[in-house]
Image (cartoon, one colour):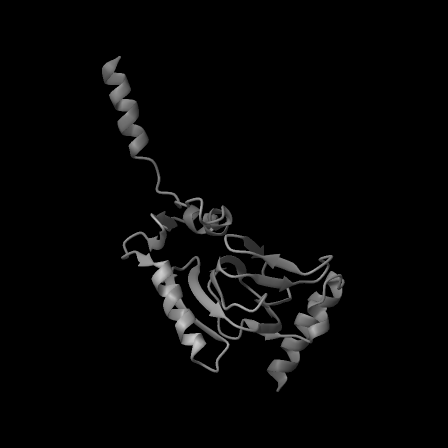
Length: 208
């Protein structure tokens, strides 16, 4: 019996490597990376709480102190006329992880090929998307996933600089982001109207 137990335990340890996600990162990370892992891309990405500090790591890379990076980004914006600054935390064939600080908002736009997950690290964030009944407001610790090709307006909610982490899956490609008229991101906008707008403005952007 003891030999059988040892064999079973050793066999369990040789299982496949999976994405490791702590409570500080939403389960949608696993959803976004699932296809890549199924294709044989072995990746471990997790944000974990270390005492009062938070860190981020990808298998084979040094861990990053998220709080320290957030402090740097906030200081940059406090003494800058820009309304955005950010860092790339990690980039894999399946996805990219970014940390970004904002003041103000980003006008209506769409990412044609990439799904996006945003998690608020500090402050409050908002999304305006079609066919929602009202503005979506996220507080520290909240996450929201946008499908690819979903028009949205987003930005700081309140008066404090907001820091968010974002996951693009697959990574953003050149010319993937298309600007749209503000009305196409208003809540309760019909889906067909918003989707048609993306194709319409992409065509005229290329013509110009």
